[in-house]
Image 1 (cartoon, rainbow, N blue to C red):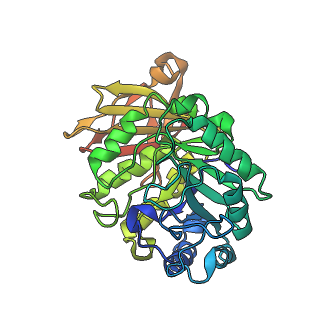
Image 2 (tube, rainbow, N blue to C red):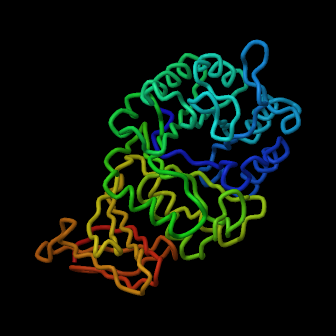
Amino acid sequence: MLSRTPPMGWNSWNTFGWSISEELIKTTADTMVEKGFLAAGYNYLVIDDCWSEMKRDEKNRLVPNKEKFPNGMKAVADYVHSKGLKFGMYSCCGTRTCAGFPGSFEYEYIDAETFASWGIDFLKYDYCLRPEISEGKHLYRKMAMALRSSGRDILFSACNWGCDNVYDWIRSSGAHMFRSTGDIVDNWESIKNLYTSQIEKGSYGAPGCFNDMDMLVVGMYGKGNVGFGGCTEEEYRTHFALWCMMNSPLMIGCDIRSISDTALELLTNKDLIAINQDKEGRQPYLANNTGNTRYCWVKPMADGEYAIGYFNMSDNQTDVLLHFWDIGLPSTSGYGLKLYDCFTHQDIGVFKDFYNPMLKPHTCAVYRAKVVKL
């Protein structure tokens, strides 16, 4: 199975947009290995929109832009693979991509064969400029079949922004992950809005096809293609922790070649990544939602423990309360929870009946919890 756990990697769009090149991809591949991203699980390197020429060739094949990719895409894929990484690319189900380059509408099989011949392992498939008479579910089923017929295993990332009741049909289409939100930008309001839009959608993601809440903006600090204001370090922590808890694919969007030490430490946090990559792939449930600003999520883990995330989305300091009876552990049981802090990587003690950390605005606390006899 190509997506037993949420896919992880890096995508060019958030920082670079149109400004992509062979050199950028190669140096990013080097950095993914040198700075420990590959070791942490980020194994897909994905080129987004704006990589092709404006016209197909005489055989109706997509052509890489000759200035940006002078040695062709096969050479880029070979270099990425030489680093132990997997290579991803972008297309669109419309006649044109979102940036106006040739789309794959009615060229699905030609494009799938082309991508396979270049050695790609991942296809992000967008939803712009499709004919109004064409149903989204039909277009995604068609490309999924084309990829499956290409002779190469290619992870299919369906990016239709949560439109057309996608939750009802996307898993059966053959996609391995699906965008359930509009585009993220680098500020707190965007993160909060995308998160709250998915509170009732958790049940739709599972091994084989994960609910994608869009790419990460951790470490952008207001720079780049979607750098609309930036976030504080605390807000980036909350962003990353939420995406990990909710089993979203983790696709880094900052320029990792110049990443800050703080962002690097967060994005390679082994305890948070372990929650996201748990082999059972169970979705969390909402154990407490106070005033639509204070949330407590609980996720059963494969080893019998639980991941518990406390999130203060409000603009004021407050505690976030979890009564243990709300997750099946009454005070009369004789059991409590031993908590391990996923940010400090230390045990903090055994607690009975409840736990309510005090959190600053826009911050969180995430624990691994083990049921223990008192």
